[in-house]
Image (tube, rainbow, N blue to C red; front, side, top):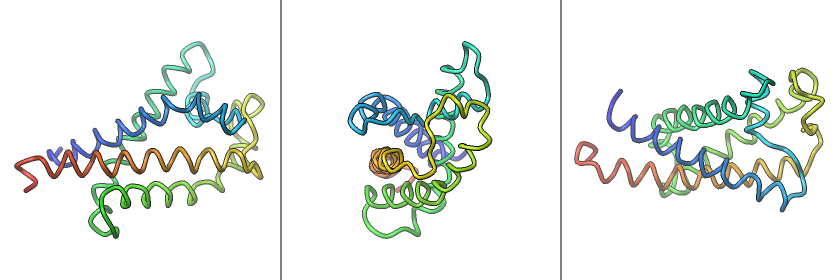
Amino acid sequence: MSPRLARSTTAGTLAAAVWAAQQPLDKRIFRCAYDDVELLGKLVTRDRWWPLARMLIHLGNGALFGAAYTIVEPRLPGPGWARGLLAAQIENFGLWPLGRLSDRHHPARGELPRLGGNDRALAQATWRHTIFGLILGVAERRLNRSSPASA
C-alpha cells in the first residue's frame, strides 16, 4: 500500500469514527432512531457480538471510502473540505434509494426504522455524510500534504 493511500484510509477511518461517536446525539436532535452503524452490524449478525461487528464494518467502510477518495479527489473542484463534502454527498444521495431494499430484505428489518419515505432519516444521513465528508477532506489534505513524499 502506498503511503498516500494509507494516510487517506486513516482519514476515512477517523471520519467514520467521528460519525459513529456523534450518532447518539443526532438521533435525539432528529428524533429518529435510524442508525447506520446498527444497520451494518445487524446485517452480518444479531447475536451479542453485533455491536463489535457494526463498528468494525463501519470503520472499514470509512477506510475503503478514504481509499476511493484518493482516486477521485484530484478530479473534484474546490478546497479539500469541499471535495470531501461533495464526495460524501454523492455517495449519500446515490445510495439512499437502496434504503427501500433494506426495508424489505434486511435480516433485522423488524428492529430498524423504515428508510423509504423517512424524511428524518434522510436528514440524518445528510448530516452524517456532511460530518464525514468535511473531516475526510480536511484530514486527507493535511495528512497527505504534510508528508515529504507527497510534496
